[in-house]
Image 1 (cartoon, rainbow, N blue to C red):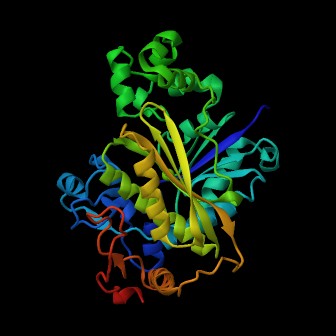
Image 2 (image 1 turned 90 degrees about the vertical axis):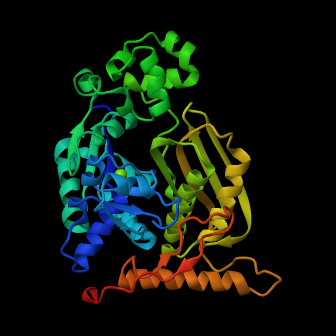
Image 3 (image 1 turned 45 degrees about the vertical axis):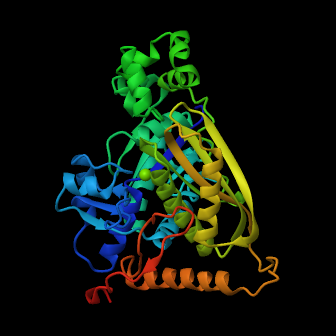
Length: 413
Ligand SMILES: [Mg+2]
């Protein structure tokens, strides 16, 4: 057999992880089964949906849209704040479980990984039995569900994990492409966003099959590089540089591929703040510090750009990471609507060997203690015990202020 790749994707990760934690804390309501979202502060005009339950998605609620719009779609919507420390823990637990199935686990984002099962699949019987084992072990041992896509390359495995959800596995081997992938609308194709769909629609192309059978030269003439890449994807060729996973040892990162194109700087900065928060929580959970921040952007024309900045001193805090990401965004982004944003960090220091500042540690040390205290409060009393006063305030370069939210529910003590 040629290569066997699995793509593991946590179903509505941020929401599922919060849901699993609430059940463990004794809250009987499973928020995966009701219209619920993880979101920024609702009282801020800029609060956005970061993740939604399947019932919320069924009502048309999308990641990235303003909470005000989501509330309009579902008046009884439950909105919960993000819990970064929890996400760091769940992500690590998932990666540790996956590493029991193959030495070649590549974390792709906080809730996604590729596993090269080519060498180890025989130990578990067949690809299907291996996938079934992983799926049920994650559900039983970790309390959340994943979809698993199985194929001979990463692109097809990723496409397959996106088929019917949740808690399922699907194969998409090359010979299954005409049956399973070609009837789907082009919007289901990896990385084909609304802008691509509109252009293809103008050419009379609605399904992935129609795209696959279109003359590649015609697509390139109309859509340039994007046309070539989409044609290759539609035919199942994994030629892209977009599925190169993060190297875990090189640093900590997180990225989001948007269901919509991100066009405004305010919206982009909210995603950067969310990504910076998740990244810094993982750095602190690993008791590390980083001194290099990179921003990666992929726009709706498939133009990629990444740039990095070295920090004056190693850090494990959200603020310097977020500020560096904002500076890089201002420098690198030409305002073409974005499909994917990523914040990555590198130059990891694990020992206490960071260069001492000439000035008293005052502000940074205070911020450190504050963030560590927040991590601990959230771990002890739940993510709602302390929450950011606003997810993003009007001044982009400053991190949001902090405020004490509603007190922890006594019943969960
Ligand atoms: Mg996911």
